[in-house]
Length: 144
Image (cartoon, rainbow, N blue to C red):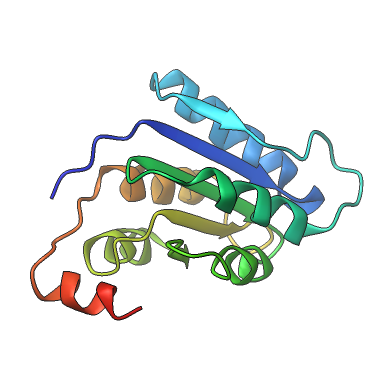
């Protein structure tokens, strides 16, 4: 099931700020509609504030979120506290694809201290291009 993306929301903490900026530039160059929710610099902030802000913006089926912090773990944990958010922590292209194909993830979380920029951009690209398989996976996602 191919998804028509309406908007991609981005958010990071201080540790993810530089990578988030690179991802934002990458998406803008592809003509993708984005909204950067912060943080606006590398001064120390609390990652849950930005994960919660992004999760609240993912209200319709066609919105996608990208969260970046040092490990990606905290951001994904905070975002997954919200109803209808399926945030997947991805470290490689395969995990990004599978998170969409099998779990219909609507948020990708990336650890800026654990992944190189080029691979992070490839993960984002795979996440955005990969459709949800539906079928037996839909039944499982509904149980979440």
